Length: 181
Figure 1 (tube, rainbow, N blue to C red):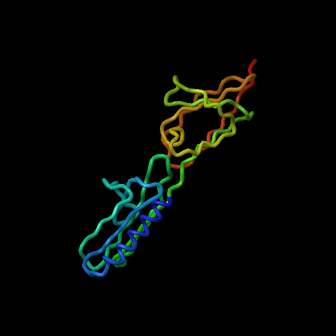
Figure 2: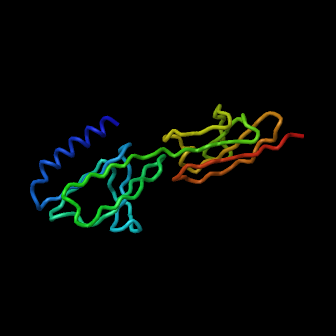
C-alpha cells in the first residue's frame, strides 16, 4: 500500500509539472492491489477490456479529455465501481481503485462440520477447517474459481458435493446435514 501511495504522489507531482502545456493531457489509472485489468468505454454500459493493467498512464494532445468511464478487475477481488469522467475534465486525471477481496462463507446445520473442497468433485481435500468459516484470502481459488465443496460430520451423512461457479461477488454456501441411520 505504501508503494502505491508513493507512486501516486510521484505521478501527481509529475503531472502537475508536466501539465503546464495546454495541448498534452495526462491520465493515470492505478489500483490496490496493482495489476488489475482495465476496462473502459464512452459510457458505463459500453465498457470493454483493454490490454492494459494498473498502474497505467497515457497522454494525448488536446485541450481536455472527452467523457469516459472506467472499471478495473482482478481475479480474487470484486470488480471496482464504475467511474465516469465528465466531458471537459481538466488535463490531469488520476483514477485510484481500492479493490475488495471476494469472500466465500461456508455454514452448516449443525455447525462444526469438516469442510472439504477442490477443483473437481473427485479430488476434494480436507481443509482442516470447520463450519462456520469465511475464506477471505484473495489468492484462494475457493473464492473465485469453479470450485466444489462438501462438509462431513460424525453421526451425519456426508453432504452432497456442491458446485460453486466462478464468482465476482461474495458468496455464501449453507449445507443442511441429515443424521445417519
